[in-house]
Image (cartoon, rainbow, N blue to C red; front, side, top):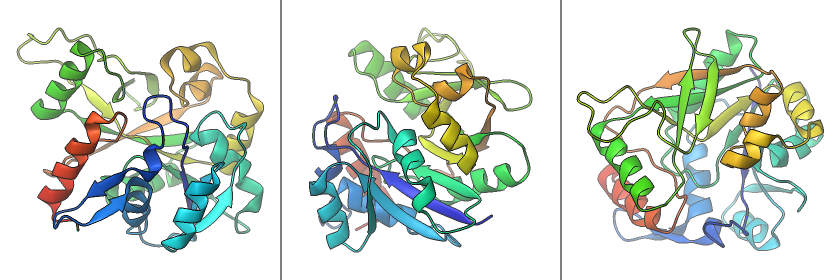
Length: 263
């Protein structure tokens, strides 16, 4: 499938102002911004027709252009990354079959997560696909610690026997009180999406939905409008996966970069 990767980035994040431009230290102490590290991670995916950074903020666009990225401006009316991607559909190369939303706060996303959802979309008729990762003890502990501290960020997913999403939440789903042994299988939703271009256009035409607004999760607009989302289980392979949702996550991601030997 002819595929484009779009990295949406927003300066005015409510939880972390200026997040795309925050510096992250690598294994040798080299400092690069979050958006540059995310772009470098996305560039590792093979056989991609286009790789684009998009934002409504000129500071981000100028910075991305300076480190070598192709950039396209999106509007300040875009409410989330999916809308930013949708705004660019008609500006992409001809005959693009699939659009990947590679979240701008996810520099730990490995390339095989992307290839997994591309493969899934080639084999199903869903409007979109997204990866889910079975939580290990460390990740589940981080979820519980964040909830106790009143922080939100990481998202869980529940899906049916056909791997179609039932719901996504910033709460821990299914219910887990922190004491169940063994804990229920909890799936960490990886903020990465593959869409068919026509599905993205429909998404942009739909108004925001009740659950989308309540949870602050863009993908719920698809579910509330009856569109199928294929959840694709991926494997951590002893890699740490976490997004930069809050300032506290910077240190977590820097530690992971160091463990991975990423400069």
